[in-house]
Image 1 (cartoon, rainbow, N blue to C red):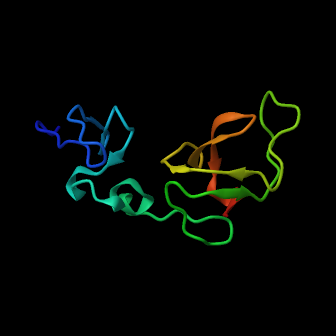
Image 2: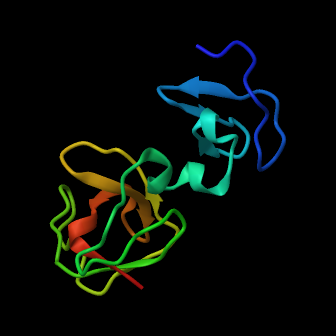
Length: 121
């Protein structure tokens, strides 16, 4: 555990905390690897040493917009997510069962998607 955590590189908040291998800012939600000193690469998949690609091979980054390329069933919803639904401002995460995109979809709310069912917009 790091005793003196660095302030947030985006908003300069001094109340940062550790979560697994990342340092997190409670005010703006920015996450980074402390060894990288908060550089821009720290909050993307490259900062973790892995690259997340969409269904056609384009590299995805935090903040990208993507389009759903496969109809998805959503538990508790009669219609599901249709092909062509645009999702803005994605966040790359280490999810469960291959779900590596965290996002909010209009009409559905917050959910996780697999990168294999989206393409970069």
